[in-house]
Length: 382
Image 1 (cartoon, rainbow, N blue to C red):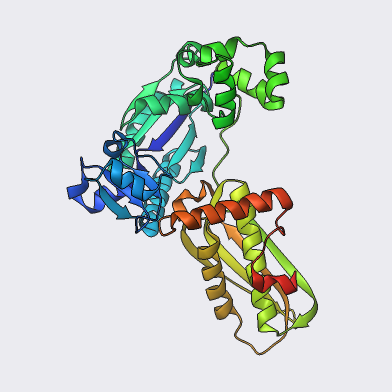
Image 2: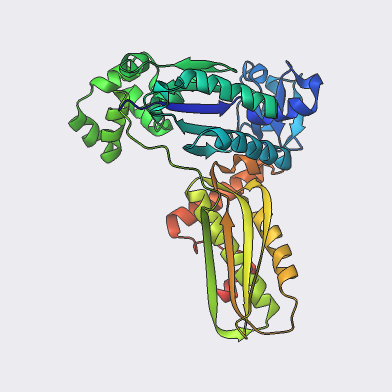
C-alpha cells in the first residue's frame, strides 16, 4: 500500500509565540536568546535571518549584524504551553502521530486517501491548529518521512507542499547535500571535497563505495539519496522516561550524602537524555524509608535538558518528600514526557561561556564515561 506521510513544522516557533503576546513584533526582526550580550541566539525570525543571524550565534554578533532587531529573553513556560496545545489538537484528529520535537510532528495518513483525501484532511488540520493556537504551521505530504521533512523546508513560511508518489528522486536530485537529513558538517565537507555538491550526484555513487567511505551510515545515506526511507512513524507517548534509583548498602539519614546522591543521579539521567537528543517535561523524585514506605512526587516543567534547572527542581521535590525523621533506604530520579530536542532551548539564560562549559562537560563524559567529571559534592560518595 502506498504510504502517505505528513511532516508538520511550526514556523519559527519561539518567535511566533512571542508575536502572539505582542502584535508590535509582527513583521519585525526578532531575536530570542540570553538576557545579555554574553548569551547566545536560541531562535530568530525570518526577517533577522536575512541579516545572517542564526541559532547558536553569540548575541553580541547578532546585535552587530541586525542592530534594529527586537531582542527577547526566552519564555520556557509559554513555549511548553503552546507545544502541548498543538500536540493535543493533532492527537484529537490523527490516530498515528510522532512528536519529533517541541515544534515538529510526523503524521501517518496511509489509507485515508481513499475516504477523505490526505491533502484536504491535512489542510483542514492546519486550519484547526491555527484556530486553536494562532500559530502558523507548514507541512509537506510525501511517501516517507525523509522526503516530507525535506519538502516542508520548501513549503515555509506558513505553506504546504505535496511530492507525488514516484517523484521522490527527481525532487531531491537538484538539492544541495546539506539539505539531506543525517548529513552533518563533517560528512558534507568530505563529500563536497569529492565534488559531490547535490543529491543527484550522491545518488549515483555506488553503494559499496559509500559503504567503504562512511561504513553502515554510507549505505543508509545512499538509500536516502534515492528517495528511499522505510522508517515508521513512531506513536508519540508522554509516558516515555529515563530514570535511575539506588538502594543504599545501609539505611541512612545523612543529609549531605542524600543530597550528593540526588545530584549524582539527576546529572546521570540528564546526560543520558541529552545523549538521546531529548528534552523532558516532567521530573519525579522517589524515596523509600527504612520501613519500606515508598513516596514520590513529580513536577511538570517546561521542556528542558539543563542540569541546573533539573537539579533545582529535584532538590525542591526532595525537600517536600522527606518529611519524617526516619532512615532512608532508596532514592530515585526519573525524567519523563520526553520529546526530541536539543539543549538550545535551555540556553535562554546562559552566557556563551556557560554554553561552552556545558558542551565541554558533555564532551568529557562522552569520551571518558559519565563519571569522567563530577560536581565536588558527589566525589566522596561515588
